[in-house]
Image (tube, rainbow, N blue to C red; front, side, top):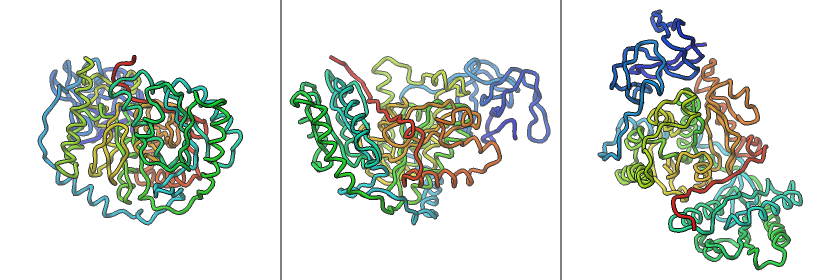
Length: 504
């Protein structure tokens, strides 16, 4: 096994594939050796050459920050001697990267997966689901416990007749002003539309801002066989009435059977959380390979975490399908920067403590790894928070980096499955199957009840092509219901809603 990896010929650092002690010798290409000047943790960066104070540090062939002091060859490179090189809100020129666009087009024309199918559920409106579940959506947080009781009792009553009955607790829907109430309504309405739910029970209280009648307007036209409503304050026994509505929904859901569906109908969400120094080497490129493969077969992938595009946004802008899409990406990036500024926050704050402990030093380093989940595909659309995907190809979705909020937004946008890459691990799962992909083998071995797929094997002798084939077949099996993800087995299906405003 190699002890280090260099990601691009221009790079001024290498990544440690094991923990090194000060004084150890690092054997370089050509047989030269480099003495380590510091202890260097696994996944962290080692200077390959002298880097002057103020000089850019290169990884992935791009700048990941600026040296804050002079850095000698063999030194540990991290927050103590480098920082971000990013500044403020930027202006951008429309300059398509023709080579990148040609590469993306070639990927889509060479697909061998266009004829592949999975066993899915075709809904009355033509949408396709990969699960046949009943979802309970509450209009307001005051009735979380009521909905929880209904879900628990219904799960017991109807076990085996549907794939599951789930409630997604949240604290909102009342005392919200402006955009906050709009965010809540749009997000919940998009979840109501998700085809993984054969039936939806909307439960309201009766005195909240998000009244059922107002929420129905946000939902739009709906099939009364699929969506039922209960207003708790008007029901003599809200639990009994809710169970009666679920009985009707279960009977309706049983009318759907799995049938062969082209993989082009699949939508894949892309998310990373708790990253480490290997995220941009193993798991994120593997997720990108899945996005390319699905898009090549005519499907859709969704990339979000806008703050984790800062510093790598031009890579996405260069792959915009048109000038209109390019301007959508610019608005996505600068709009989120303005959100930070409105709240008096530093736009380019360093990554989380867990990310830094794993070897990620700056936001641009995190971003250059994060955007790899989008593969090499053409960016075909940009959508707002709470909206649903309309285009095939790669869609950029407005949402923050927070794991719960962004996975919920991906699910609401229509993702059937979310690929969640991680170097630190988390048990969390969204409303849809959430595939945890570890960046390293140690994490996969230690957290077997969390991790669904080990991308760390790329460092243990497996090739990207081999792991891509393995993960692709796993995704087809998950979509067909033959395999459950750990979040499904553990019952970890949660949501979180974006908030930006005043609560009364």
